[in-house]
Length: 473
Image (cartoon, rainbow, N blue to C red):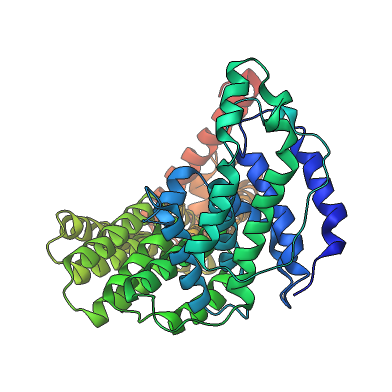
């Protein structure tokens, strides 16, 4: 093994970064700097470009103490055992293709190693850290119990002296300050040694339980799903499926992670996988049904009735005992029926309006203008009754109304023109002459209809003109 001389400037830079941190010794930022130093040390010692994943390593180094305890169940009371268990686990995982989550776990482990090898912590240590060159060492394979026993003894060798100097008011100006470079170097080199042992050391057969693999896989899913990159999630899933068996419990747990992060389609797929592996799982069926009920409610709000009905039916298929799904399904079905009835009525108005238009044209072709106008008025009423709820039918009605009103104007002009032709002095004064001129072609009833209709039209025209003149709305 070789001494990584090239990293000396980088380690000095890390020390410079640390010197600006006014926090307790090996506080979060100091631990982050130590871990970064270890990244560059190890990247030069193994054929794995760990520095390309420094962001994920740093993310692991900055986890909270609670997260650290969640990752390492043996941490409380026995940190060396926790380090050893994690080293064995990471060795067993496919280390030759270090992925972002693996790097994250290395960072968290680095935080643990740094804190385990730290000296006596005093509140003013980081505020006194200066640009002190660090002391790199050749990498070595770590046997945790003996290795950390030595490192912890080295870290604590001056504890008594430091405590006495702080009581006497010497504080950091004494041994604590003198040993700072050595203490930081110890933490960085220990972290690098542990990582080197994981990445380049021999594989150890056994020592990892199925429960540990499953916990690692589930935590990896949580990590990748939270990042939200679909392609990255899919690639990770392929790796993790080789690590653990995907049973109903794991599928349901992964489904929950997807659901919590808004990947609802993926969550439903995982839940369905869980049900295929273990039919009738009540917890899974309840999650599926509750999701589709919510989907149905959203669809109802947006007036997407078919989507709502389909969602409620899916919810019932998953869990027939859902407390509200059946009632919501009936409501959606009823709303669809009501809407179809309104649609049928609007189409009926269009059909009737077209029928009256045809009648009007037949009457007009026989010069029976009054009857033609009456039919067009009926047609106008039908088309105006079509609502805008149904865009296609509504657009048809608007086009038809324009045609009807244009034709009404034409017939009115033709009727007035005919009356003037007959009398030369106005229709109202010469109705009898018109009747004589029409002879047998216009019976008495038609004449009454024509006179009445034209009278009403003329009165409406006068009223409209007066309203316009007086600005009456």
